[in-house]
Length: 366
Ligand SMILES: [Zn+2]
Ligand SMILES: [Zn+2]
Image (cartoon, rainbow, N blue to C red; front, top):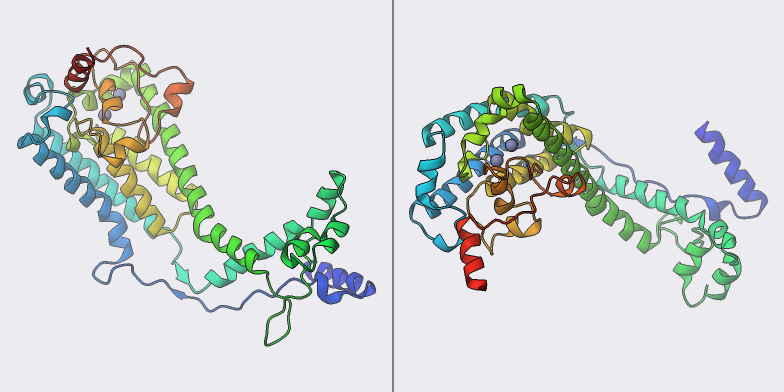
């Protein structure tokens, strides 16, 4: 069927004396080979499984050092004394339950990665050319679109063909008779088509995959988290464990009932990874970023220089409110944005003067 269409369009073009003009540039051939590992000392498989766990503990240790040596008392959300007085779980219990959750996370990651097809390389140039072809085909709609706006694309194109040949070619509907490959004189892509195709392939598509994954994970976590607060049985059975920490600290980020940890964090991120068709490497970045974000959200400090606290307004100070008795019914959004809290009216809007950093800030302003 596809061949018939190509032949038909060529015959039609030949009738107009321009078989060459409507022909699409050929796609480059390719040979596939298995993708090598990013680092010579660890396979991508093990890296994707262990990087989020290693990053969790390295970041936690960093914040723990700040905590025990009291390096930034001015940015503390609570006093060190409150950590022991108000929390209903010891640091040992917290670390133990985090490790349990991470064992489940590692096992799930392994299953997710093992069910991925073997990744191959060698097709990049071909895939970029496919995007360039799509751009070329999209240009075919330009003359019609311009005539709808009352403009004569053919006339405009002709008038600028000598000064701006590439723009003239685009306006004419992707018509570039002057562009050929040097060796076989076959039609070729305009430089801008290839640049735009590379941009789509290397930046726009991965950016979209990452954005969709972020939106999905935020939505998944918001509604399940809120459900755990609305449903008494679910709260008592699962989520109350995370709330034993009234004064959160970095490694308490994944202090959860194992079922909750699996459902909200592991499964949520896993579905986002599968749904967006990420590669194992992209998945590694995504899992690691969400891990870093969730550790930072529990670090117990409101740092003015921490990039993770500046990117979005969902940060340690924001999530800390949710850990307080007076804020527990608000600020459910996690881990990236505060979107759902804003839209569904669950954002905390009262005063925050009970926290150390805020109290000092308010006093300074007086
Ligand atoms: Zn909660
Ligand atoms: Zn929390």
